[in-house]
Length: 168
Image: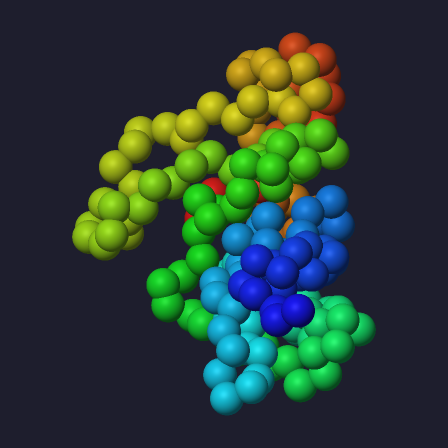
């Protein structure tokens, strides 16, 4: 049976993000493309942000996982443009974050360029719902959380602290 893009994505669902082990690289939205060029399997991925320490581990895990499924010569290619956005994260990935006590990112809905993307025209950040009780009565305590892609929040209703995956 010939490998298809869908079967390769199924295999890649075994590769978890080392900083967010509840979601895989496909749900995270960093897998951009699967291609078969000259008999070689190439996986295009986009880093979540410049300098993300997990990307090297993810690349190694993708190669190892594909090799364990018979794709010994698989390659990973980093694609930097367009930049990754949290909008590429799947709804299943967002729900898994929530189920593990991490508020998922807000939708950014990039408009394709322009000054509005460079300078936020909003007066306040959108409200972050508590992943434990669903309350919107939350407060950001620190822009810096357990990893660079998360911030720390506190729920004033259920009194639980929680991480929020930042929107990019």
